[in-house]
Image 1 (tube, helix red, strand yellow):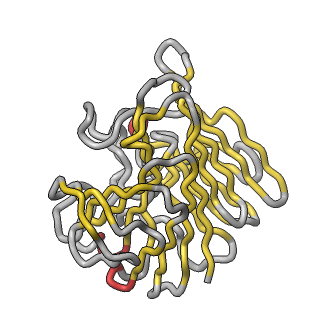
Image 2 (cartoon, rainbow, N blue to C red):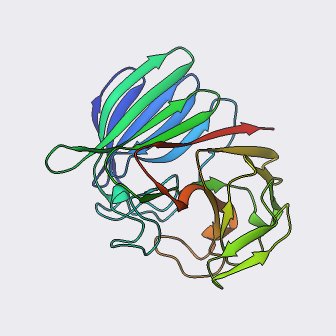
Length: 269
């Protein structure tokens, strides 16, 4: 991967090219972050008090224009899965604009906007970085849309992970059936499940990294949990599944109107 400096936007914000994708890098005393303008795609966030990145990124990610980045937080919009073409919507492969940025001693606030060809505003995502990370997605144009903030979390060892505060029933997207599952949930196989978001925050207990990640879902109807295990997956190595788990804040079963959906993420030892 070739990383080429483009310009400084402020003391804390710099624009680079990762191969042919423009990437905004944040360096602030609260931590660091990296956001690809293709898809307004946050793919790295490391708060100052942590030793590891909160998000997982494929070690073989090619940063290829027009291809969604494997890792971080892809924005699946205005549909989820194969409910349209391309899969997971067009938002994650289109260029977004950085429309506002505000830097204070304790926080970085960035807003990215997605426009149609006629300059009509389709959606925005605001990213707030402090001791925690908050993402707020707002739909301005698509009625009856779907959304998933498809978050890939970096874990030390998937077999030493427990997911707490999930319901004991879920829709298994692999078998197409509603199933009863244990809570807390462990992962030891290919998992692709859609849970109800009614129980609130999901807690990722990452025993190998000796930390917990709290994922607070705001105005979501669903939580998607995904790990492909040994299943071949594009832009992902054979062993990539061992250090990641997706816990996604989503509006799948309940249509997204002109409203906002958010996620707050914090890391604790």
